[in-house]
Length: 252
Image 1 (tube, one colour):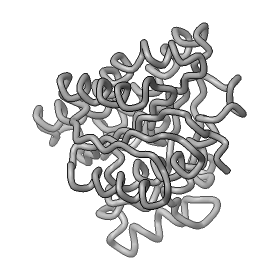
Image 2 (cartoon, one colour):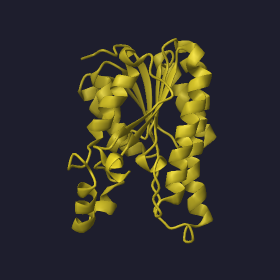
Image 3 (cartoon, rainbow, N blue to C red):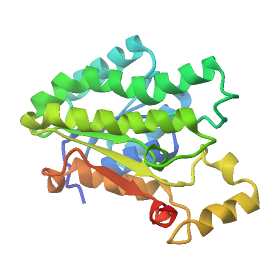
Image 4 (cartoon, rainbow, N blue to C red):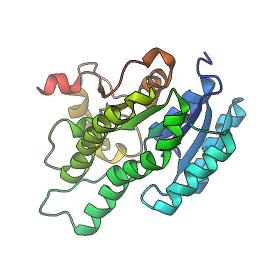
């Protein structure tokens, strides 16, 4: 469609799964895409895929939980593209443990990536997005940020925090014509979900709870990101958009 021709985007966690699908979709629609990920080999592979498809891409190895990496990532992106219009805060890690069993190291790891990392990247990108005049911030939360799961106390808390941050930033950025929204995917077929659905019984339980009777795929999320990055979404901000095939509707 190329409706995003020339738009400059940064996607974190672009080494695979949802992040790679987002980067590919944005490039397909005409974006110049900076792909960032902790895994150097995988993010370079994403960059090559975008270039092979005719897109303009930059691949950066960076850890969103490390301030120096965040600063370097944003600096390299802005230098390469001459600015920034779209930020997709996708980088995240999983954690599954009941609260009595979770250790301090695990708590720190998940919070630093899933919540503090989003804050740090947004803070570093803020002046460039405000200057853009059509800035977009798209934060990846989760259905676990809007519902409860006893096995996911730390993960769920960070994803709920992302929704709170989204609303606060939407108010701050609004006068700069910059929108800020959060996406809450349900079960999406990625490496993160794979261990949870390896057991056929667990897989069937997931499917039973989804109105559309299928798991999502990364492209289901990427399409929504492309819409939010476009001009068609220019008056949509501070929203939480659930992408779960009707799972949460059945749970309530």
